[in-house]
Amino acid sequence: MHRYLKIHDIYIDFNYQFNDFFSSAINAYEIPHLPKNYHQLNVSIKDHIYDDTTDQLLYQNKTRHIYESKTTRTIVTYTNDHQDIKHIITYTKDYKHIHIILNQKLGQRLAEYEYVLTGFMFMEIAVSRNYLPMHASAFSIGGHTMLLSGPSKSGKSTQTRFFKNTFDDMFIINEDKPLLFLKDDQCYAIGSPWSGKDVINNNAVKEVDALFFINQADTLGVYPLTDKEKITHVFKNIQKPLYEHFINHILETINQVIKHVKMYRFDCINEDRSATYLYQFMEGRHENQKPLCN
Image (cartoon, rainbow, N blue to C red; front, side, top):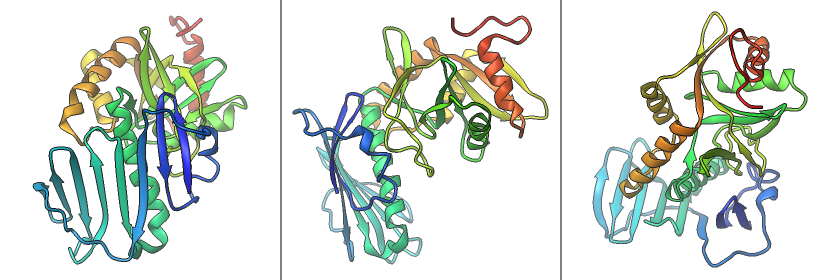
């Protein structure tokens, strides 16, 4: 399959093999042609993959070798027994050209690997363009846009489901990996075709009112974070760049997001009323609390 995509101001020439995760979600981002400045993201499948690069070995462990030349990097990932290569990713350091080769032996998991690895590299593109990929669920309800963030198995998906059960007007921007960016001192969240295993996303841009970091608890509560806590929580729940050159990009974006976005710890419970409580907080309907937005 071959698609031209526009994800906010990121343009991608996307060649992929499987529709399993892209069949419906990707349509909203498709455009008829590309401008001059775009990124190529290509996926191919081979019966066998050889590690024949002559570039300098930069890093290795049992299952991963990373090679580097002046202009490119290559990531070679082996099986656990080191008898075969699962996939190779080669990309230019500006992420303008990315090629992912999958081993046919991945079998029924080929579509899953394609989705995960193309998503990973798209997030790298986003970081290079000063976006901040957050591990969060981003959605709007009643004029409020919020993010629920937390690491895997923190309960983020469960809490998002409580909102779905409770509010008919819930609009999901991206259920797993929204991109944040700043413009005129305001923070915005955007969707992309890569949005976790359930692939729920919309081609939308929404101004963010608040970011909540989930904490499983016995009682409900919302608590402001200190600047130190904000940095810790944000850094835990973003994609760190592969290429050190872009560390400064992401640190500057983190600083700006922390400066301009209200952030809280959300003590939640495993019940639908978690969603009601947080919405009431957004409305300013808890004691001694002003509304977060007018």
